[in-house]
Length: 246
Image 1 (cartoon, one colour):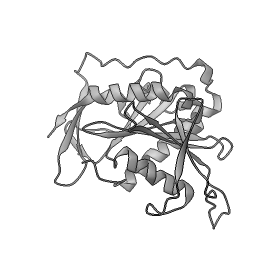
Image 2 (cartoon, helix red, strand yellow):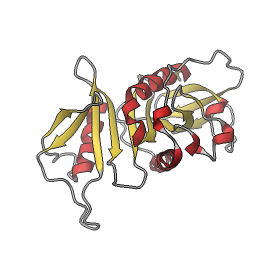
Image 3 (tube, helix red, strand yellow):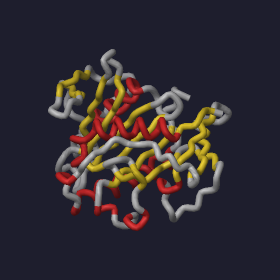
């Protein structure tokens, strides 16, 4: 399951739409100074849970997820034991509770987060992949990158090579790449963010992995200072809903 790169294009287009909507709506009227993170707590009531089976590769192991129904878009009717290649969930960023259905069309009224459960290549390779995209090089010809510390406790990957400029638009790369490592030096989080001013409402995509399923969450750039809260809650949330592999 571990060595599949960005397989399902339609899923990624979908999550990009969620991220764009998240960033656009959140940035318009949401006051990020009111963000109050709290640890995610697994719900004790499983009576409304739906079972989603992720088939991350044809013929390979499947992953069973038991997810409270409130995390799904109420406009989409999902059957129990549905098999999918990936699953998008709608989340309130402060405590990773379900996004209130009455606010679904009003995501600007709080820290809306979209989370995609799917499968990625290992985090080290994913960092190289995004570095090649940002600098416009192929994965086999990436210039030397090095990390500089940021005030957020992340490492920002930079290079002495010239920034990539799109030959069609003449626009330079508008994305920053951040990583976080554990005490052993392994990359645990890969975060790509649109630079301030590059688009009207810049957002971030935050990639993580777990033993059974990988995940990326999309949120406004304004919420990047809370990336550790997002990381901790996302890992706790995925651990809570992941039943077992099939």
